[in-house]
Length: 331
Picture 1 (cartoon, rainbow, N blue to C red):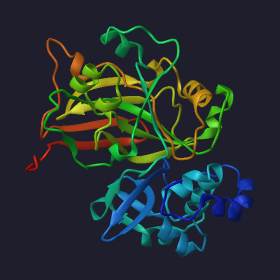
Picture 2: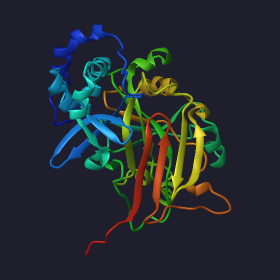
Picture 3: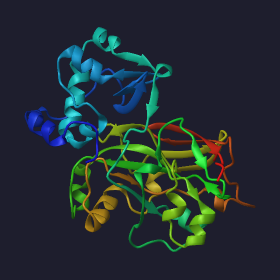
């Protein structure tokens, strides 16, 4: 993996003993939501709690339990990583947690995974979206990919290229893979997933439909907002029954549930792993419901500069980004 952290293999060897810990529970917060953030010139990661973030790297030093130095290494440890994080938080005292807690306005939230090996996306995975697109219901998942250079985090700008006229949004539940695997049966797929996040599949529809395939129209820089956090599989609830919503300038555009997906998350993992090896930190965006701008009636309502787009996933949170016009450079 291409990360600036220590090798995941090193951490795996060092913490194999923690496999026996089992699934610990965090008693002092309702949901374990892991966020990457920066403050001044340093970067860390922590747990979101209402309008605060608990810096778990700082807390780990206070309680004397070592943690990997970045989210990617934590994810790469899979169950061991989740147990380590839960051990640090559950075995700390309230006074210790208070020393490691920051207000959200004191930090800048970042995309939870900065440079995934792959961003794999599904098209037409909601029946109502396929119907509004006047497309056939797929018998197998329709997949495409985005480059990691398209990633931005919470509150970062989505740059509208000057030559793009039809900019669109898509709210999606995204999986974060925590374990390497190939040819994974659906019954074992949960073991491969570390957690879930919110994903906005920004799309240049004029480019997408002109090309006839989707890569160029969905791969511009900033076209993959992700965040604000990763909620672990133990605390997401039922991933096949999560409310998802997209809003533009506070107007609800998409309002649905993951129960309306054609292929659920475990079936998706199964189908994708028949094609390619899934790796830790891969991001899999699971498709979008109806309500995208291009198919609105009586006419499309595409995104414009200064629009604020919010995509929300139940038990994950809200990911907010503003559309900004590309600054033309003198040529």
